[in-house]
Length: 186
Image 1 (cartoon, rainbow, N blue to C red):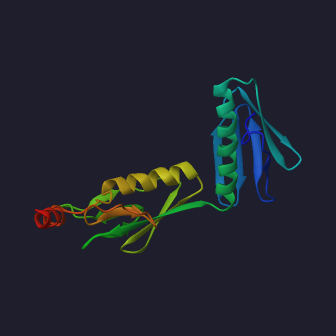
Image 2: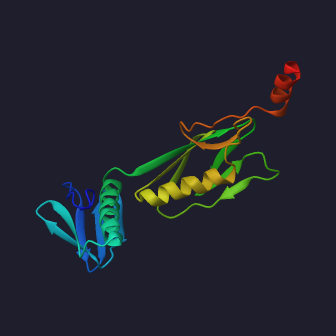
């Protein structure tokens, strides 16, 4: 039995959940978000809880049971607290500037890179070396952060690039350091 899927979701006071034939709409103080549910998973609202039941015990259905419970739970947290990811720019001359809803990045290329703003996502630039991505959809916040990081991922020799806050980048020794070690051994 799915341990995640069978756990009920508690509905906070300021959140409203509607179940309309395979679509679960979650409304809260930060907005509303809808999730489509597979027809093999049944969603029921009882008292102040959301319960999910599966049609059978096939492995694929058991996986969906836990998946949809997690998605609905993430939506409840998103409309009450929201989600955020912080990115850091490391490198000489690297900077981020917010122009309207678009993000302009100077990350060592011959031209600035423009990242278009996405509906439902708020991008903040508190200083030129950090970017905060906020929104109610956990998956979308993570995907936007990954897309921005992919513009210039951190490289292993000097660590320059865009990285998540507190991300550890494993460093490699360069050619000069390796050459110095082998030259003294001979």
